[in-house]
Length: 217
Image (cartoon, rainbow, N blue to C red; front, side, top):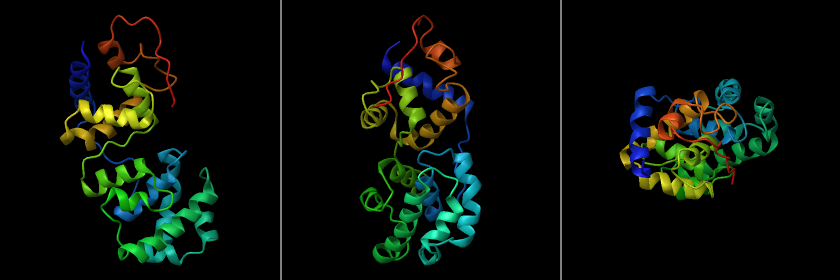
């Protein structure tokens, strides 16, 4: 099966599995989505969703968040990894939204990535899910599965993003990146499948005998 044929089959199967793709991080608007995605670095979505209700009650807008002492923000998110750095970034991000963008989350990759704690993946999630701009955020699940399914070499996250954008129609990107994440969590987990176990791996590579080693680059 050629790469493009594999991509078409993957798109079909994931649509069958996940016709609906709710954003896993609880949020109310672009600002709270941006904060939730920033907080999710090196954390599970479940843990982020446990701490954000209290944080967003105290700081539901950039104005309110910027007014909170950094120590108070830290108190809400202390359970998360890198909590001190994230608290500092959340406060400064809120301040910069007021200073540079009239208190609004900018619908721009460049402007988002200029904010503290916001990398390309975070900006891509916000652009895709808050503003509907086609993007393909690559997390560890997507990076792992793209390699396992023979869609990318696993050389780097940037290479994986480029390869997936070439293989799949732009109209599918925003939904597909969530579908792959859901599938990676439910069926093709890091420990539960080595490229030979889950339904899609078996269908894509019925004759595969050796496990696919995951390049975490």
